[in-house]
Image 1 (cartoon, rainbow, N blue to C red):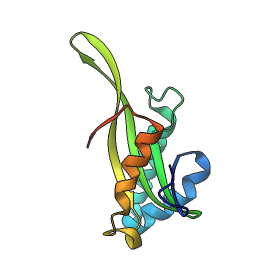
Image 2 (tube, helix red, strand yellow):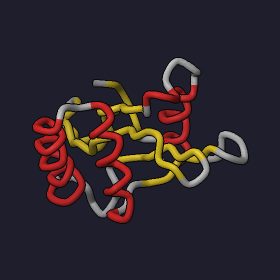
Image 3 (cartoon, rainbow, N blue to C red):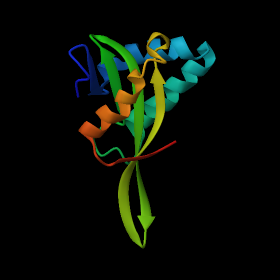
Length: 121
């Protein structure tokens, strides 16, 4: 999804890990950032419900990563039937972009990739 010519939303892949580390370092104290990366690796590499899909979308301004949105794949039982869905969580936007309405493009961009995104945590 393109917000304009300079903003776009992309699915996470491992080449984006350094950009995420920079976002975490900007937002969290160093000890928490380390724990955050451990959790992130489980969510992106070991979550049994991934089914080959990326659980994160990233917002870029030009070539700079400025935000992230998690959408955890889950399965629940509704009326006796197993249903797959995505739960939005873990939204983060770079400090210099906050308060300008740019963060709203993360869930909009994620929906253009995956319309099973539901709920928020």
